Image (cartoon, rainbow, N blue to C red; front, side, top):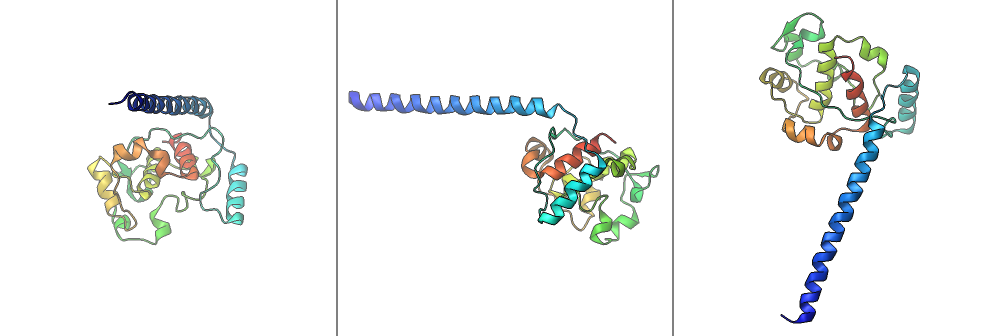
Length: 194
């Protein structure tokens, strides 16, 4: 090999290493900046949520609003038991007959528009912890997340709208790729009520 070719190979390797280091440093700096911002609590007033929802509807946006400052995705454990037909205190591990009858699309969700409309604190606080967890799982299921708990997976499999294709560990590791800003906000808000 000639000396000129050898120098070109060394230069190419050095350039590759330099690019890798620049990308690594950029990712590190960006992640540190988002960590400090995400430590802030992300709860909006009911009035602010309504204002954002109205603005979204007026502008024709469907879940494309910028995320409220401080919003972050938190780990959301699966619910082991869920309430029968959304009623507090009636625990079951099988879906109720009402849930299996394939109600209208709006009736089969705790919050039918939770992918495009911010849930208010008033709405979230009215839920039992089990209902809040089910609402979180519905948001995740709507985006194709599968569930490790057989009873929970069977519940969502019984829903006509559910198309679970993403393994839980893959979904959870890449949650910000699957959820929009509205869904992230709603999951974080509902997490405080479970």
